[in-house]
Length: 635
Image 1 (spheres, rainbow, N blue to C red):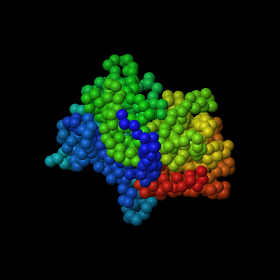
Image 2 (spheres, rainbow, N blue to C red; image 1 turned 45 degrees about the vertical axis):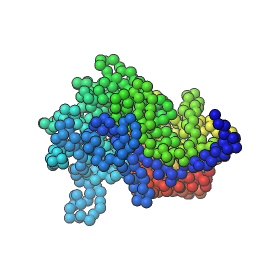
Image 3 (cartoon, rainbow, N blue to C red; image 1 turned 90 degrees about the vertical axis):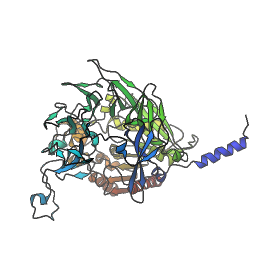
Image 4 (tube, rainbow, N blue to C red; image 1 turned 30 degrees about the vertical axis):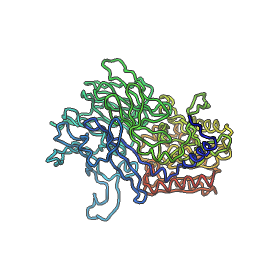
């Protein structure tokens, strides 16, 4: 064996380190965004898309590719329909399902007074007058059946005629909300059969069955009061969907239910977890699903019960990564999407017998060769009530424990959402750490993946144990010699933005700076202007005018960040979307106005055309540059 002189080896190591660059917003936005579509009809290839930002044109460009299921060279696809039959084509190939907007209610001034056609008045007599990022315009998305004539859809029939309901569900429903039965006799669709104020205070979506021959509509989930979504048939004709039990609770435990004759069987009822998504096995004997567990998203299977015995959930994958999309089964392998905090999504195969994973697509491999990776570590922290809390600590590339580093407490949104090994193109942990910051990201109360009790403890207790969890996490990590205790920041969005506002008035000078994106500042005005009232009613306990309810008054006073604004004493960057109707513009404006009047160094970053997120490429780059500019100035 030839020995390499130490001097040459040392020089090579220095060169290799220098060759790798720190991740920047511009570098990150050049990465391809991989999304699986499905398996080709001949079971030989996997179809997927790659979206790449075009900064100059301020849009995402998307291309479709095909790759052999066993791996190999990817090829560009110009006609995906030739390789994979669309899920909305009837089994006999004679009909196609499509959706279209149908005007059903008068909303605008000119609807009521046609002669005043230049008026721009909106007239409402109930709630749900706006939702997520759109104002109600009186039109509803309906499902139509179109005969296929000479390969093209003919005139369609509205199967929801006369129903002022939406399918797909707005704002996040998609093509999974309407499907064919395997025999082609029925169309199954998801909708919330409520309008106006009743819609705004309820989560009760239902699964409906439309009989093609007769037009008869049957509510298959009648009496099931929570979310019922994502219907899917097995090869054997069994229908399953995702279901939540309690009306008004959008973060309830989500289970898989199967319709068995007149009975509906909850097959994950006894399992102390919440299902994110599922797919049937090819033979219909099993269901595969993804779910949060201990700060990750993993891949599971469950046998379809043959009797009244409760089936056993089996975890197939394990590791510090997220299995975050289920594409489909090919033989003894299942195609999934996988991420971790250093890597954007790529497609992988999972061996269903062993759980072993093999990377299938390699869209971003070349880019990663030039990017220095962050070290990601799991840490267990004892909370003030004696529980063990998982905390992610993300270290800068080339971390040196003999040095001192500034740190960021990251506050997750939700509030009931998992903090896992996801890869965000905005709140990106590897990008934060590449800036020289140690990121502390606690799996605080309210997160999925740690049991139902942990997940539910946050409701009606926003300013309680969860805030102690945040402080326990940052205090524990701050004991390390490499943390500069004089340079700790607090950042977050949505509930994380609320957390930053609340901690700004309750931090005993732990933090030097704050960043809050679309955070709730004043709980009372939030209740009066947000759109999905079921969320506020569940999380706060009810409306603020119920003066005799101590829990509700605590939610609107003690747990409102505005209550402590006179104690704000550190710089704060406030980010607000103009089309965010979930956390409306008044929240950010109130907070900025208070900070300015208090004489604090503060800045308002306002995106008039963005909603709760920042989606346009150029706006996203401005967001990133202002985010790190603020940290450089104040931390």
